[in-house]
Amino acid sequence: MTTLKQTVPHQFSRILAYGASRPDLSVTNDEIAGPINSSDEWIRQRTGIVTRQRASENISAVDMAKEAAAEAVKKAGITGDEIDGVIIATVSHPYATPSMATLVADSLGSKCAAYDISAACAGFCYGIAQADSMVRSGLARNVVVVGVEKLTDFIDNTERTISFLLGDGAGAAVVGVSDTPGIAPTVWGSDGSRWDTVGMTHSLLEIRNRDFVANPVQEGEKIWPTLRQDGPSVFRWAVWEMAKVAKQALEDAGITPDELGALIPHQANERIIDQMVKTLKLPESVKVGRDIVDAGNTSAASIPLAAHRLLEENPELSGKFALQIGFGAGLAFAAQVVVLP
Amino acid sequence: MANTEEIRAGLAEIVNEETGVNVEDVQMDKSFTEDLDIDSISMMTIVVNAEEKFGVTIPDEEVKNLKTVGDAVNFIENAK
Image (cartoon, rainbow over all chains, first blue to last red; front, side, top):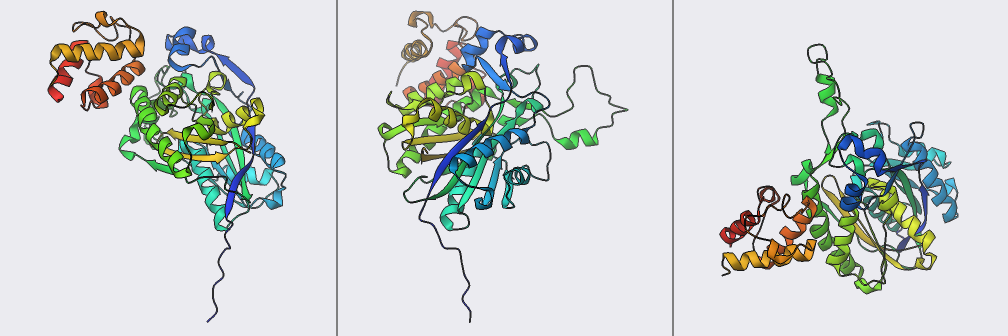
């Protein structure tokens, strides 16, 4: 009997390069404070955000994803025909189907496997976990992972729990074959019992099923679903539960906190970042991604955007260990230690 | 087991560390938000530290009911 062939594994994988796309608008706290009866001081004190980057109406999430992916692919020194997979992590692609990933693959000159994943702010780390597995299993040699959001399509400017935090952007990474270990085991999971602590106001079916004659749209009513969260509850989970996940990721990587070059957490709120640094007792030598201060919370894009900036501002971090940890709606989380390219 | 005053004093230390509010201002009748100007995120940090210090569990949904220092002290005392 003929024996089946199976893929031949590669021993190691690593991130070869990052790319980023930052949109055109820088929106100040003063510009958005009016409708939520707030102030620059209140927003800075509670979130650390000074400005958030947002995209004009004519710039789509796909545009930003293509730009970030193109930069990562160029820096990785590969061409379209060397890409075996494109994974897009996003919650703001406005089509249930087809995926955004096929468009991005096409823009890179590739006909490779391409699909989107929905893991919100954990999405980029989920994508890295998948790409790492694809490369090491031998299914792929190079996989492009993009975290992208145009969250401004899903906010309500009169809403006080999350909308004022949010920004737009895209970050990308190419995961490829490596001679040395470059991506440590991913610690990931979910807690669906907290499904309703972050997410959309309502389902699209509620719009479809509504009788707009008997129940017309009220003045100021938003019929399009927008984002909401139970901030304090999410804060508690994000800091103390995620600190345990971060510690496990370090342990699984076989390193201690003082061996880290950088911590790159999801950029949800600077107070979460501060409290996480404190809870993890990280030494001052560890650089901490703080892209949120002028980018806002860009969900799936926040980790690769912060990594991209950290490397631009601190090129000496190349070759060092970084702990990246994403957490958010689902609730879903993922963390892994990587070697920075 | 800690008595009411010991719990209040312990909680006052936690509040002071998180927010800088003087320990003597953290009295039973004080409202966390109105009198001590503590926001919801700082409140969560205080709750987590109180759980650790007093060995109790304070669920998220309960935190919303802890309006005053006295509410928190009584909850911790009854939960122990």
